[in-house]
Image 1 (cartoon, rainbow, N blue to C red):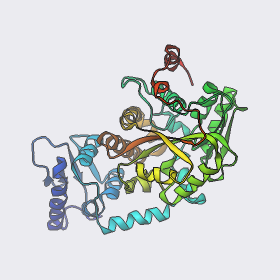
Image 2: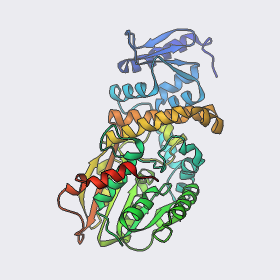
Image 3: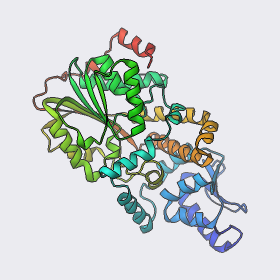
Image 4: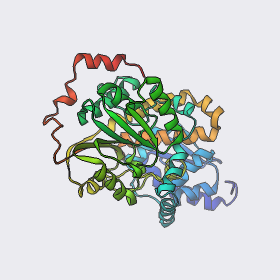
Length: 415
């Protein structure tokens, strides 16, 4: 580490460069000797204190990677604001494309290291989803749904909104008793169990997280649904059989562009000619890699596709796209709940994994919340059907005109 007290002319030149870049986002930059750059007005969004010259240089050459590394390790500190406000101001005020040739080199290298091959996908998923389930219980809802909720009203609780999300998807698919469903990327199993219990379908659910599959199987046994739901610890590419419904909630982000052809082949061979399917996924307005730091430290192999990229791999299939919905603000509200619960649990998280881990996940959750608020991240649901499908109603009344009894069920149901 090069301390700020040495190489002062270089530090001040770097400070000016970084400050000029961040000024439109109303961010002030400060060195530990008190020297400041960036926004000069009376109400900065936040002040970022940089502790050493290496960090200053890294923030100029590769901000997408270096800011996360520096915040997590404590080499930068945020005063007078919080991470969500800082990120949101950056996303709304600065160009999406940042960094240098060095940043592009690092991004391509991360793609190679974390490619979603059969072996690579298992390693990538293990990094994120095989953390102790007690960690996720601290801040997710009681059913452990780790995907965007659906808020019939912004004041709904997280538990009610997650239940509403599951019903919203089931109504879109118009599930009927006795039908067969293939779910790829099933998390801790809540949605598969909900489909079986509430809609009478039979589900085969695939996941390569050993921890999640073990938990899901225990939940199926407790619910008495083992005969209706089969949780399979295997890659989605090994899905066999044919089904009335194909559904994926929050898994497409983990496939990677190079492997869309694999998912296309799975859907093509597994969906009956009378079948339909739904993809629920984090996306972008334009093709763009996921933040380099998040790919390196949180979601290795992650890539949120644009809507066009998604429709492109569906196009060769014998399917019709019936409905596209963007739930961006619903994910922002979901993340507000997650982040608030996480902040209340940081002492316990620190006991489990240490203070650096606390900052890492605060960075990830805060940046995600800001991305959905600012519109740099989207949440798409795409409903599609084979040519012989006659199961989907021709109006949207079934999505929004639920009975009073169903709404009461949302508010009173338990996991």
